[in-house]
Image: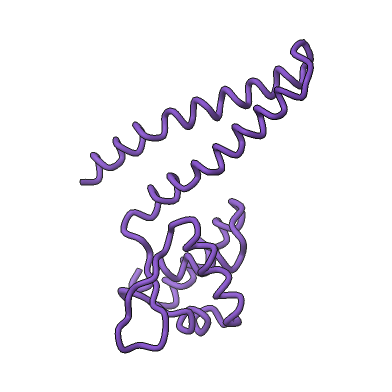
Length: 152
């Protein structure tokens, strides 16, 4: 697919898939720009132009993508604008950063377990939730190690 119009249509379709998966609309469209660009890095202004979006909405999207570890800011000596790029190991980084979400789920389940009657169904459901997230968290390091071995 070498036609730029076709490429950006594919980027918008990817963004729609990301939105359906729960990502905020502007973050999904911004991530699509990072995935489909041929440039080493892009500025917020370039993204705003590409997406025909406001600087504020792009700024918020960049902040959320950087917070979860998908993109990073690059040094740009001599430039007055911030430059960003997709991290080399973005997907593994994203999955790793989700450990905080898993930890929060574990803590919420533990608090629920402590607040419910041991013989009640709520307690059992919360115990199952806790066991699942505990298992998932224990499996992540080995899974990420296997991924890194496979991609090197």
